[in-house]
Length: 292
Picture 1 (cartoon, rainbow, N blue to C red):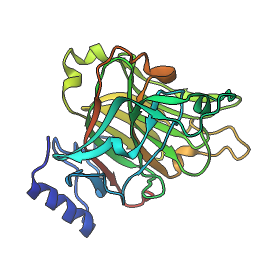
Picture 2 (picture 1 turned 135 degrees about the horizontal axis):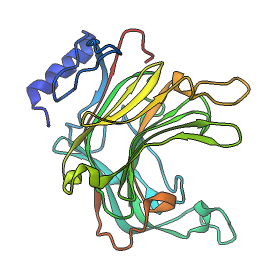
Picture 3 (picture 1 turned 120 degrees about the vertical axis):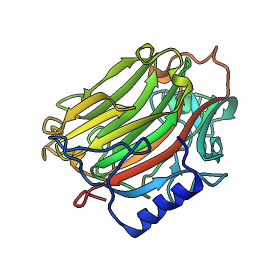
């Protein structure tokens, strides 16, 4: 559901004024406490992507080049734009020279002379970060072979995986995932949820859906369209470093990206491009006392 100008202006006015309000309705489903008691949240940050052109630079930066997971795409800002109230991240089959190419290198980022695909990865790092809150993202994913869209967060206090990672949405291999990870003893600890796409129905990926992360000091709850996908108790999500640091009690920033192939994304060679990951809005609500 895309808001009209009047409703958007009302939300922006609330954001500026700081007046608390109860999160209600289809646009922002109610949040309740452990006993089902409605809890007041305040909209503290949002991007409605209403201005055509590049995404707002006050909100988003970009990853550049080869990033992770031996993925095939070259990330660049040119593959992200706002059109008709949507952020559109577009993956293309096109060749880009790798300026870091080294024929003697054994590193995957520098052993490739070219990238055969381009895409975009947007992030709020260095601009906006949050500890706790309700995060709502309305989006439509492309659920074809070789595509790996994601909505996720990373902590800013330390390196991965000790920084903590929250995967509000990942899609690959005909599966919707909702995960969290942190640093365990000798390995990365994952709390995974995997739901086959077929459980949602044959045309589910053709429509927009609302993903929600409810993050409190006690737990992470990840859902889509009010269907709970995963719940992670944070008393167990503690790094096994010397400080036994707690990555989900610290600030995180958000990422939106569309990856291609790599260690999980699958084979895109028979997929028709361009492919699109479309985001209608991103909204962050917090209660008094939550970290900003």
